[in-house]
Image (cartoon, rainbow, N blue to C red; front, side, top):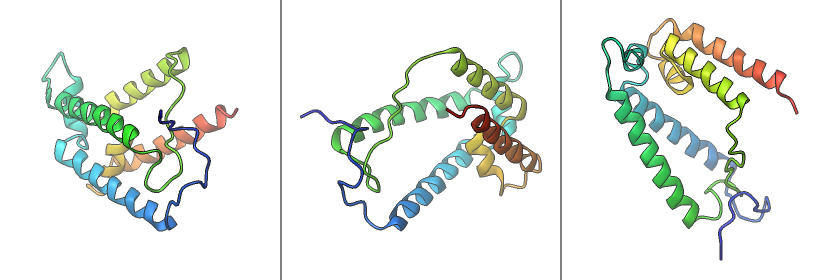
Length: 156
């Protein structure tokens, strides 16, 4: 019988107490933040050195990203074959839009420009809030304002 991962009827599976999802999300977030910190991805200078292919290039983040992609590809395939729903939910929210369009390319370009100029992307920026980097206290509010502006201009 084929697995369907985005069409389950909400409420058909016991998802347990609401706090279970919070604890699992907190644990995953802490693990992700630890990984970002240990790999150097939360250090904007390391990120900028990775992006500086014409200068003092640091290729180490290519291995971090490559490892993350391999683990994600294998992990998601394994998980979606073995479970009908997440532990604390009734349905996997798998993206259905696979189109590469102008909107996606513009967003990717803006993301890349911001990442290259600042050395931060959202995950490492949030991780760095407690690291004592003063510039991240400017970046995070600007990032949140950009996310809010995107939602305001793309209401369907």
